[in-house]
Image (cartoon, rainbow, N blue to C red; front, side, top):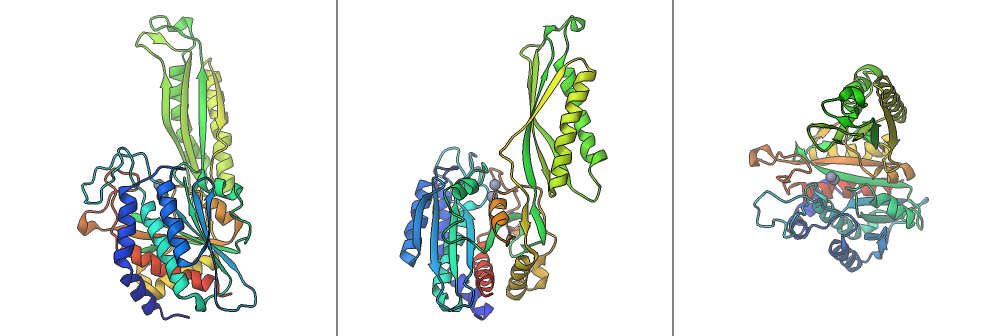
Length: 398
Ligand SMILES: [Zn+2]
Ligand SMILES: [Zn+2]
């Protein structure tokens, strides 16, 4: 095993290049499934490092495969996954490497992920003699619209070779740089979207008794939905029911025929997700019925399952983080109600998804992800490279 202090020093020595790649990507953000320039940079770099490279996997995804140089009894394949897409947000921070594309911004840190992934890929080449099996780097498009992972899976990313283990990460700006957040079991929530259509009967606003008002019914439904988490979900579990959009009507004096609502649900457990779905359906239909209108509820197919860490794999990352940065830098039971399509990779192979702090209160870098003022402390780049390299080598050991 490589001395971890050496690994840290090597990652630190790479800092300027990691920053340069990240800033170049930050200036040229590309939205979901449009990551052509980014994918080109990734493919060129992986090829130059000696990886066997496949492009166009899941439209704009890139895969790089490298065999280790150390003989092992049971060679394992480790999938390392990094997402590459940006967001349709106008950047509101004035930095020298500000986005050059109108209305597009790396406001989630996937520019950092891509740079970190290339850094880890370089480290794995440099220390090829320390590990056996196969390192399979997966640069994924379209995480933000939850489509990239499945698109790559449909294009066969989980075959030839099939991963035995997996590793992924997110830079996390609401946590101080250098903090590592990790948990056993679910770390990101399952998510699902729903749509409720409330149908009444339109009428003049001055004669409500001649119609059936879907606006009032929709208001009651929104209120009643709040009882699901408060009254139906076990207080020891977590759940979220949000109504994110509500539309109906055209004028102050017209009662419309229809009101439409859309929202998201989140939970860590499948059974809680099912409970949320059942209650939303029951409440919307029953409240509507009681008020003389009709509600129909539809759930989108495009949800994600929870992102679930394997305890043994999480322990490898935890041990690496503790050895590299000290136990006081490691946060356990780290969970976020957000969702990630990395969940699909973690369903295919036991693995770990880790959060690496990227905020810095002293430098005013505290904005949350997806904010137009989002920023990261670039110290997170070498820190993450060291952490993921150490974890990857250990994961391939046995
Ligand atoms: Zn995001
Ligand atoms: Zn993200």
